[in-house]
Length: 388
Image (cartoon, rainbow, N blue to C red):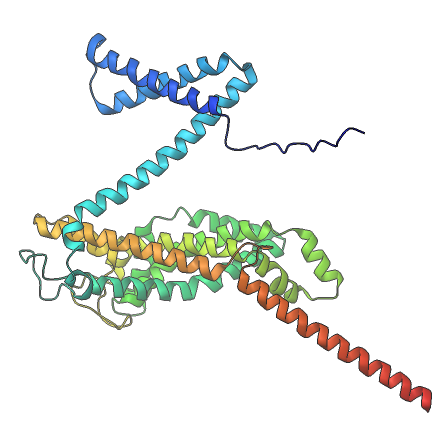
């Protein structure tokens, strides 16, 4: 008998070494030929044109090198893959450039300890970087976005459940209005709250009014993103829950929402990112303040984006540096909120952490003991009935 030969598992990712050499060769040829064109053959100059011509030549050389080993469909597939990877690399490069640029411009302010613990109440445009900070703006942003989340998270997820679990003409109307509100300019939301709440109801400019304006911007984002996530929950899960006798409410609470928890956390992140970076609604509804205000219901209250806007337009170099430092703090705050939302959201359905597996094991052990106790009592009742 011939020994059984196990089939080798095919690896779909990673690529062959020759593929990497092809990419490197095409890139080197494109850079070399473009450099010759710019320095020897043509009067071209400018970094943008150099990059565009080099990338076009890279695609041409890459297609030529791939054609030596592959056929037409494979060549088109490789070119499409190269374009997609290039777009992803470009987006990462732009994001990295923005972060590095802001960090470099604001580094002189970020390295001062007082920048995080003091406000601008006793610091003016001519004050050195050792005076003043962003403490009041951090407090304002946290309070405003927290109040806005108190409004938008239950309303947004509830409206998304209504859109995903019900059908009818009113559902289509609500979905259309929500999609239209996603493109609502932020200045319009600020003017709406200013006219209705501040002028109409007599509420003073405050962080609470700003949070209402931010809620108008965040709510459609959370609704649309949550609606997409909830509609991805398999219908078989709902059918299984209903077949076991659960009500519609218990099915939504114990099946649909836990299954979509990770996606719902992502929708909340998207809404938070939209609201925490708005400037014009806060300027119209909360005003501008250089002192810390812990009370969001009384007095003007500044946010990080508004302070960044007010500082970077200053003619003073130190104020501009403070503005870039404030923008860097805003990026860090968004990152912290993102991590918190990810931790709260947990892992996708079906993927349990070590703690969750331990809790499931303890719950299963308790259920086993309960079943054994019930079985023991049932046997004891049967024996007593037999004796009688």
